[in-house]
Length: 308
Image: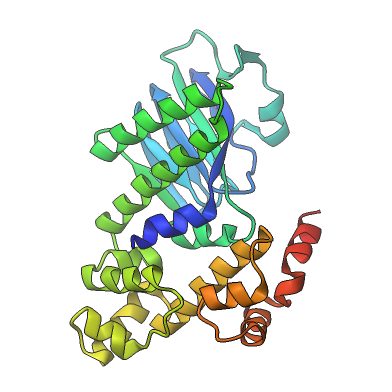
C-alpha cells in the first residue's frame, strides 16, 4: 500500500479556482486570506512571492507555489516592494475577461499568476496541513514543474467545461497534483510527519504495512522485523522521522478512517470497529471518544453543527 496515495485519497481534495491576475509596471498585492492550502502558478513573466514567515522567493514563468497557510501571501514586482492592494481592494479591482488587472497597464512586460484553493473532506482536512511544509516552491526548470504545468492546464480546461463526470475528474487531477508535489518534497528535503517517514525506504515500507492492514494488531517488534531493523532502532527512527511512535501513528490512522466512514453514514458501529481493528463496538466507541472528543454516534452531527 502506498501511504501517501492512501492519505490523499482519503482527503478527497477538490479545487476552487481563484482566478488569474495580470500585472504590469511596479506593483504589489496581498492575496485575500484563504481557508485552506492554495496553489499558485506563474503562467507568464516573473515576480516575487512573499509571506510573513518565509524569505521572498523569485518566480518565473512555469514556477509553482503551494502555500499551506495562505494568511499573508503577497506577489510583487520586486523583492522589497510595497503591497498596495489587499483583501477587499484586491477583490474590487477591475477585470478583463475575468482576469484581475493590477499595476500600470502598458508599462513594461506583463506577469500572470493563476491561483486555486484546495478544499478537503472536513472529517480529516487537518491531515493535509500536517503533510504540507509551510511553503513548497517548484522552480520552473524542474521536471516536476513541467508535469504540474500540464496538470494545471488540464484542470483549467476541465473546470471551464460542464461535461459529465467533471467533479470526479477535477478531484482526481488535484489528487495527482498533490502527490506530485509531496513526493517531490519527500525526496528533496527532510520533513517531520508522513513525508519524513516516506523519505526513509525502510520506514516507508513499515508505513505501507500499516496502511495495507490497518486492522492488524501491529507491534513495534513485528514492524521492525518486517523491515529488517532492531526494535529499538526502528522505534527511534520512526518517532524522529514521523513525529509520533509507530503505534500512535497506527491509532491515528484508524481514527482518520473511522471519521471518514462515520461522516458518510456507512456501516454499523460493529462493522466499523472490525474494519479498523477493534474487537467490539464498545471498545471502538471508547477509543474514538477519547481521541476525537465525542462518541461515534454523535460525530457526524457535531461536525455538521460546527460547520454551520
